[in-house]
Image 1 (tube, helix red, strand yellow):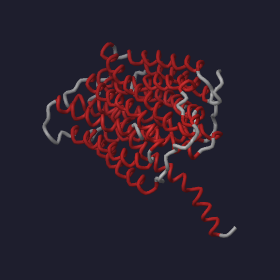
Image 2 (cartoon, one colour):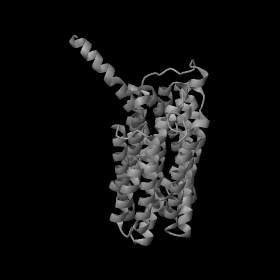
Image 3 (tube, rainbow, N blue to C red):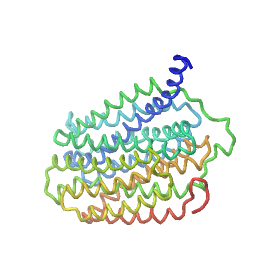
Image 4 (cartoon, rainbow, N blue to C red):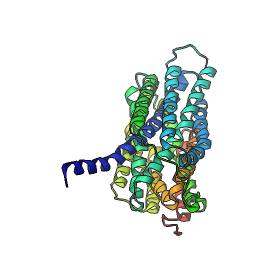
Length: 406
């Protein structure tokens, strides 16, 4: 084999990885904004005169709009150019944090009501267009992986989602004393680079409208229980983080800057644990979706019990390590299973519907958590524990990736 042939073969092997990385870059920007907002908007909102319930509504209603948009984006990914969808979505995802930087920086004097409206509008834009990026990336993963390697491929997608959340949490930790405005500005800048990368490397993938009907049909009867697990699981996971900073301020008497930074630290170590678990999945160490879901549920329950009893930041960090490692098994298990249960022409639809379930849970979680916190500082933790028990029980009603009942 000549040198030219070897070089051509290497380019053939590398090109799909570069294309997938370009698709995942936008996902990282989207989830980093979510991670930063989850921990930082509570304190910023209080400084602007908003209540914890106001902040919960901003976070939750944005995710709720994503619920409506996600299935539409998923269907569009099968009919339109996925490259074009990405190039439209990424700039709008970056616009949301840019507006939030302006509002939280208080560059113009505004009332609490105006600030709430501006933050809510920015969140709606970020969530609506961000809802396109994960289903589109899921289609790319399905295109680039064999069925036997699908769980591993979805592990990479889940790792990208978690890495974005980790980046947002780390940014919150690093910029806690400087104020959230610098973090929002950094995420908006990262979005510009993600758009440039997508414009340079994403291929012009044609729509898949000529496949057999069975390959394009949404298999709801096979995947419904996984969708419910996604909804309940994300409700559980997003119930607690929005009240971390408030808990540190109210229970441990920290000032706003210290509470924000410590919340960033707690969330960061948790997401590092998520990424660690998903790296093991991507490496092929775990292959059974049902075992991953059951083991992860048990781990989350134990971590939440530790979190209730935590008396300082170190104990909270240790609890989040346990929770994060366990959470790391849930998303790849669901994504891999539902991808295998659907046809080649239904991957975008499946991703969109699952993203809707994810968004619905992310919408319910902050609203549930902040309202439970008004009743009792420990109530969000007990509520999350009840939800994860439901996830564990649901695994006994699911089908495995081959479609047979377990």
